[in-house]
Length: 402
Image 1: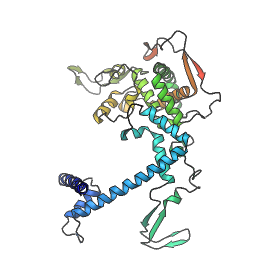
Image 2: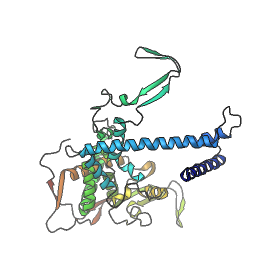
Image 3: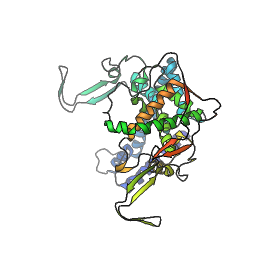
Image 4: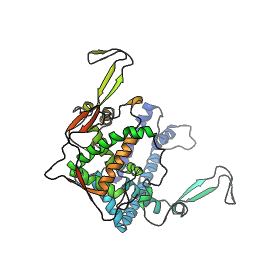
């Protein structure tokens, strides 16, 4: 009785909160409980809904969902244990994205494509509700059978999600079917001038990235673990894999933040304005110091430290902080005048780094403890004072293929 009373108090508290929201927002953005409360308040309703009715509906939904979640979790753990390769890849992804010092949080899941794929594949093979009912709104013919209007139809979701015409090896647990495939249609390539214009900058950015990665073995380990668990060890990384590699994306962004290929860019003022006490006349040439903006300690924590994790979604970071960083991250300019080759640059640099990390171990030249990351501005480009010199050593005796 004590548990029952406390649960009733909880539901009553939730109802009161929803009633306040309804009174304040006048039925805007209603959820199921709001709709039930509106029906409860309708004195002209043919069937009167009481507060206890609403509580019963919510309780049924809550406990029904809990039971299905438990069953799905059991199915998932059974499949994972029966497939050690899936367990290894999944654990590797979690270790490289979340780390080994804290538990996974809900907000981490957007950066864990393997985990998402395991859940989806479990539900495909073992749906908690294998059948569901629908009603035909009008008469129709289905494969020679006439279905009259308002007929109850039982949909066999179990059979649909094991249909061999749709699913390759439908009875096999293959989470990778829910990861973006390198064989899926890609977007059309950018114009050739974008490619050639960005080649030099892409090479320089790749050098900066490899230098930072080699100087930070923990980053190299996490990045290689992510690539191995998402792409595997039998083929090379492709451009289309990058959406499933948040660590790789973060490494590229952090490299460009610390070492922007173009540390300055020029804009023109369309009209006169005051900036911190200085009057800027109309049509004045303005040089934006992107290098300084992306190392501003008021925006970036430890701005001189290579920390790719700052570009991974954080459970503690507030929305305002994320928005502020997005505004201050300007390696390609911003607004309508931003570089049109931005996305192409991410793809080219990300793929190059991914292939080099995936396929090789990297050794420094003799007597060099760390890569020298001293910078120099040549023209308008940021380059390494000491060109990168490292030796590749193949990670596997069997060459990887595309």
